[in-house]
Amino acid sequence: MRWLPLALTLAAATASAQKGPWWVDVDPGGGRLLVELPEAGEVALRIAATPPGEGATEAQVFSSRAAAGPDGGWLHEVEVRGLRADTLYEGRVTGPGFDRPVRLHTAPAADTPVEGRLAFLVYGDNRTGHEVHRALVARMAGEPEVRFLVHTGDFVEVGGRPADWQRYFDLAAPLLAKAPIYPTLGNHELYGPGGQRRYQRYFAPGSRVAWRAWTHGPVRFLSLDSNDDLEADGPQLRWLRAQLDASRDDPSVRFLIVFAHQGPLSSGRHGDHPRMAALGLARELSAAGVDLVLAGHDHMYERGEAEGLKYVITGGGGAPLYDTNRHRPGQQSFQVRHHYLRMAVEGERLTLEAVGLDGEVFERCGFVRGGPWECDVRASVEPGAPPEERRLAYLGLSVLLALLVGFYAWRRVRPSS
Image (cartoon, rainbow, N blue to C red):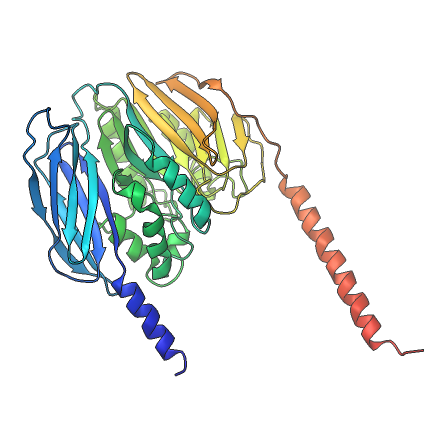
């Protein structure tokens, strides 16, 4: 009973917390704006196209519907429709004790050429590195022209722990209010009771599965659930193959990007996803015309091309870095550092800049669809610590500790002279 007051205090703190706002499922006509509040009262969004001199500027007002959550809060969802494609909107979202600015650049129509660059950001595995995460968010929130954000998973340490989600939304707030998020499910989101349920609530309300597809102008994104059993003829792979077929037949799709928390190719500590490797998924994605695979899970940066498939590992969002490098054929760079990716589609070219915690662009590369990687700033390949050497080092340390403990015990029990 002595823990009851503390438990009630923690529950009240969780229930009274605010999260958001953040955007999901953005398309040419709008998207969904989400806010979590301790009350079920109405939330209103008031936005207008900007700058004032371009087109209709009269503010549009949208209201929310609310759903109670497992931790005492109410998730307010504002369904925003009827906006103009490829247009910047700014405004405010208000509710009981809540008033925050928001912005949204709607997606371009799929069959309309995009003027200039379609810029977006990619990062993942922030998890427990809260100060690093805070610093990266500050840099990303200050990026000009950014349309949206791709997250490669492991938002939190324990998905079933409400305080972890609160911390994530508190730290990411400056970015999420202006950059819609396309997420993928990390393994840490599954830890603890109700972990995946919270992930679905925050990023895919109403969906029963964690694999999703979005089209943003000339780019189609397929988000996979790498925690799934991936049966050869299971529901996720059937869905993936149908999406690949549809993308191949769609002339408006200029780039096809697949992302997952653990991808089919990695030289890092975790390495290739074992089930994807057994299924030959890298070769299948390459044959289907996938232009790039993005993943996290290994806490470092890697870029390369293997089995005909370009890939980037970006797990540098704040979690402890991994320096293991199982150097695979096709690896072109490997860096052990916290970072995020600044990416852009411009015409027939996709570009990538890897940005470190200090703001340094430590690699700048790109490719024309179907062509090779081309870099004007190329990161080196850090050798890392091979797993065999790491195991030997751990074994040596264990033996040394055992000897020290044994010596200490012998000194304690030996007869005094």
